[in-house]
Every structure is written in structure tokens, then in C-alpha cells.
Image (cartoon, rainbow, N blue to C red; front, top):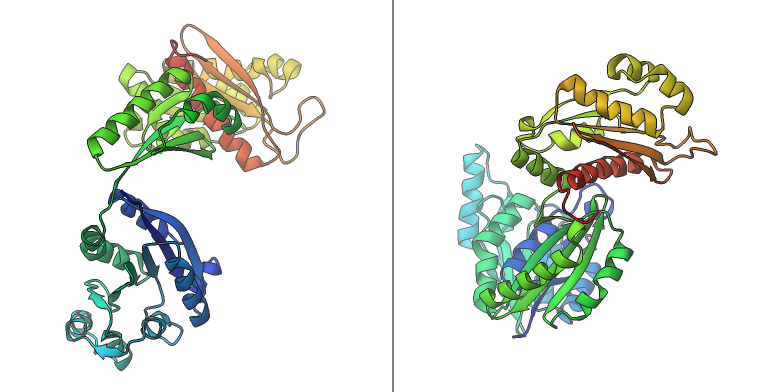
Length: 419
């Protein structure tokens, strides 16, 4: 079955100036995938007739579906409808149902319909109007040469309602679309390049209709396995078989399946085992506590934190020995071990974790350069510490450290996995 390819064109200088973020395209891509339509390109252009025409000409050479957002307002800089009228060699005509919708919206707001807004009910004769029940600008559906062109407002809630009510169902009727199914495997502890090396033989053996994508982020690498086919059940089974193979290739580095964050996976492990945790933070300044408590229900396992940034606080609140700091310094294995053990005792938790390091951009020495970080884990049986080396970016060092601690907790809780 032939793939149905879509291209998204977002129109608006405000996007190009960085005044707003294009969230529409991400949402549209997700929803189109669900009905078997693959987005191959997203293009952002200015409010210019020349750019709109060029974008349409280019898109129709490579896509079956061209979805446009933006430029449908009542002001002079909104050119999309005028350009589309000319592009499809048609003329504007009053569309009575759209005028009724616009009139009703103004009436509900207690305002009088203006001539500018009345003009929004004039639509190209060659289009099929797409009703906008939440705004004053109707959408437009054009068909030409077996291709579909749809123009919608850039206002997210208006676009989403039109897509859900009309555009997506009509695309399913117009095209014979294949099934597209994604399986996401969340990994941690291996850089993308090393992970790719380990998976090379498996990846090379994938069937032609299954594709792998590496999606690195601060918390690790998301592996997205995508399958396309005519039988959803068969495709689902094939994808699951490949995921099972991954479990045997990198067992110690998979922490979840689907769109799950590392802090969420760790929280679930703590909850399942009925364990509690407390944090002692220096260089991360409370960011680790933030990650743990960003998950709903974290009060079931998270007890509290001490942000001991100054050495006096480490001594007074965490009971770190003054001689430990004098002999080894704040950024040391000895100090971070005491922090983890003592915060566990202070809060009466099953687990204590700690961070201490030089986040940067200054403060480093030849012996301990910026990016030198110590982390530790303590429970009733053992204390484990790890030395990390990151870069000179302060915020990145803080985030990397928090994720490293979460992964250390995960590893200690899963004592049977490969480390």
C-alpha cells in the first residue's frame, strides 16, 4: 500500500520572529500518524503572497496532503485566502452558513458584526468550506490532481477542533491509508554513538517496513521503532517481537516503554517496592528534588530535601564532619557519601541520595575542573558513590547530574540488571 505523505505549511511572521512557538505542527504530526498519514516536511513562511505560492508549488511535488495554518484573520496582513483564491483560479463568494456562524459568535459576545468580519464568510468557490465553530475564520478544503490542500486558522484550539471534527475524518475517507504504529523504548546510560554500535546488527536485520530512529535528550536516548503496513495486528506483533529482542541486547539500559520520563520510572519503582527517599543537594540546588516531585503521587515515596550549598550548612544540617571537608573538600567522595547517609538518617527514609560538584562556569581548579561532580546513593546496606565529568555549561551540568542520580537509584533498585 502506497504511503500517504503530508506537508505542513505554517504562515506568519510572528513564528519566524520567534514571538510565538509553532506547537500546531507537532500536534498535527501526531494526529496524522494515527490515521496513517506521514508528515515528511514542515515549512514556516512569512505573510507574503510570493512565499505562499512558492511553498504550495514545492509542496505539491512531494506530498499528497498539504495542510496550511495561519493568515486567515480579517486584517490586511492576512493574505492566505486571497492567495488561495488566485492560486486555484476561482473567485470569492459569500458562504451563508459561515456568515451565520460568524454572526452567532459576535452575538454571543454581545458585539456587533463588523464589515471586516463579515468578509471572512466570503470563501473561494472552488473550495469545500471547513466549519470553524470556535472562531470567525472558516477553513478551506481544495482538491486538485488527486491532492488535498487544507487551509486552517493558526489559533491552536480552532485548528485542533477543525482537524478533529472534519479534516482527519475526511482524509481517511479520501485516501486509502496504511497503518503506522510507533513503539518507544526509553534508554539511559549509553551515549547515542555507543548505543548505535551495540544495536547495529539488530538494526540491520529489521524488515524493510520497520524503521528505527534515535532521539537523544538529556535523560538518555529514546528509541522509536516505527512500522507501516496494512494489518494492524500483524504490525503490532512484529514491533513487539523486535522490542523483546532489544530487551536482551541492552537490558540494563532500558528504563521504560512509551512516553515515560526517567523520574517517573524511578518513582514507580519506589512505589512498587514501598520505599522512601530523601535528597541532599549542593551543586544541583534543589533540581533533583524538583524532578522527583514533578510526578503526581510522589508524596508516596519522597520525604524531603536539604539544599546544603554552603559548607556550614553541610555540617550543621547534614552532619558532615568538619574534618571531612578540610581533608577532602566539598566536592569529594567522602563528603558526598556522608551527605547521602546522613540525609537518609535525618528523614528516616529507606534511601538517601546526594550531589556535590563544580557546576561552573567558574570555581574549578586544575585538580577539580568545572564539571567535576560526585553523586552518592545510600540505603541500610550500602553506600555507593560515583565520579562524573561533564562540561562547562552550568545548567546542563545541573540537569545531567540530576539524571545521573535518578539512574543510579534505578540501577540500585534493579540489582539484577546489567550495570
